[in-house]
Length: 487
Image (cartoon, rainbow, N blue to C red; front, side):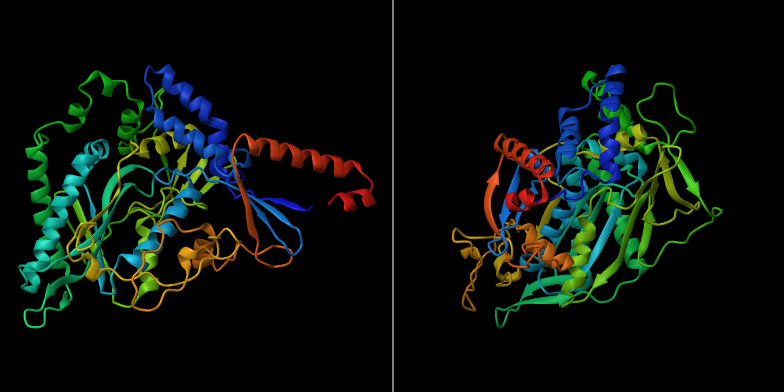
């Protein structure tokens, strides 16, 4: 029988090869310096190396038309890490969920708040403090919406993603908030819940919001014992555990820019690849800075633009290192292209392989810390949520199969007016069709729909792979007529 083993593109990309070649040296270097990385950091690297490997488990697909078999390996599932494959799935899946079942069909605006350099390490280490600063920022934005529209009891809504990285892979916690650009308020006469959109804003409005947000966040941090007069970085390293934490040192190095590498250092400075002379750049429209807090509100989407909204959601949910930005130079060093040129003309950064692993290790969050939050009417316990969120579309699934091989009954067509909830986990086939218009359930030989025979997990996956390898070797030694009969 002809059998195809999918590779999922993980074992052939440059990042996977770099991690596989230098991970042991990186971990050994951390131990030689008397520090130790948190256990979840090494576990994330190990799981990434096994992502897309069939010995960790796979789905067995079968085509009844031409007797073709496919083995599709399982992913590592580290969506909060740096794995491009798993981060891409998380990006596509959550964006589809938000557009179909969370964000109503109203105008939205993206508010992006970047924090000062002196606060980034503090908020990157303390997730609760970071979420508290986010709550203060959204309180300022929501209060400004109410004053601007003259609706003191209006109900706002927002979804926020806390991104921990910059385009240079430096530790940079900042907030991407997709805010409903207006307020919901109930009409006193009819009792109907109406949406009141916000009029056009200008840069002066953004300056007003960022000034109040900077003042309120600094007050919040001061109440938590992190005022401007105190050395937050020194406070985080006072205890003995922090001194032995190698990830803390890597996060501090990712924010610094020393001139040359220290002998034996775990993390080294990064060289810049410049193509033009440095020059002053003006701020774009609807962007303002106050005391190191940078606020940008220039992305606005009107109602009924669901395709553009899904692209915006994917942008806020993107991973730290997309495929295609990393190249290897002839001297063995790595070239990381920036998303856009910096003001000094830098278009790319040059890393040693161990330095790249250090940057990736610094970005990994502690397990169990949620980087996505829902606010206002979009919150899970909001009283108006049921009246605001849309009903998911009633479409059949390409990838979810029932016991009889047909479409999963959870995706059956339900009469109009009946509310239903689509399962949170979307099959890969649905995501590939939605994003790339690729039907992954179609047989590559005859085009008919393939069915799922089984989910094979270790140790059975090892025995199946060994038997397939034995069959391939036996068919290669046999004469052509025997090979055809064996297949």
